[in-house]
Length: 471
Image (cartoon, rainbow, N blue to C red; front, side):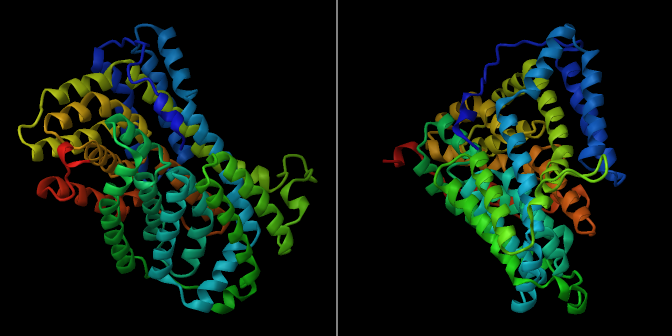
């Protein structure tokens, strides 16, 4: 995302009192998580079914608040969070972008590429993982990566014999990689600046950790990513159109624009415009498909409306999550957790690093965005604890950032997972294929590998640097 995330107020001036104190403040979150787990276990998960869970949690919380006015204002501050608005805006543009790419024939072009080159099954799942890695590395947005790539890579991979669940998890894994390593990622920026490290130090020292995890994930995807059914050529021969690959230029436009330092929203607008033009050039899109007055009342006005409609579910649920997160912050739940953490300070450098990893994961679990979690633990816990054991600023930043990119990319109430699943459901419906359960996020091979790698690093001391070793 952008550097504006650093402006987040870690010492929030708004105070929200709840009946039952901290435990009362936790009850709305407990209700939300319980309902999400219940819906997921009953195979009724999805962004729209999750709306009710978020709504009930917010309503329930009101009756636990001592000041209904303060509670209501807290909810509004959460919904109006500036970083959340950036994500929502990007979703609106990326939703249309995905529809344009499909309408422009990119999926059909990938069919042709897969049939002609034999890039099918597990190999295509690996290609999807690498594509998501590169896209997220260039944009720094895990959410933008999933909602931009899923509509294209998921249906193509399913038709080319990739295992649907592993394919979906591979795209999510690639998105997590960029969020973990990209110098323009909000988590990278926050982890570096809260620890007083330079971006160069952080990226250079984090690269071995991230790449080791990526290699492990790639091997897992190659082993498990196949087994699906490749559609016989006769069934899709009418869809074999190499011209659809022209739409890949639009991907290049977005990535190059983001790499040049332009905002993700600006980059996605350029991608949308170029996709419209390229779709017209290859003959798959005309102006009436993009926008027109429907013949019948209530009908779709075209691709733009359909694209926005496809991300509405994820947007509404994300806003509900942001509201509940704000209640956690303003009621003092997060501060209490941090105070408890500082009282359990480890006695050795190994224990200190493991404590940083564990507490960061714990703090990030109930929060829908991982950069705010870093902002909470970075200055108040990670920095003083790391300094006590003379850990280098970049090392402290890496422990925190790697930890916040593990379980965060598996839990169904986190924004990126919500966006990823919303895009999966939309892509599946558009192409008449089945979407895996949201529990497929727990198959994310990169995040599991990163968890193993960072724990191994803390236990063995690999990649550990001390402040007096840094020039």
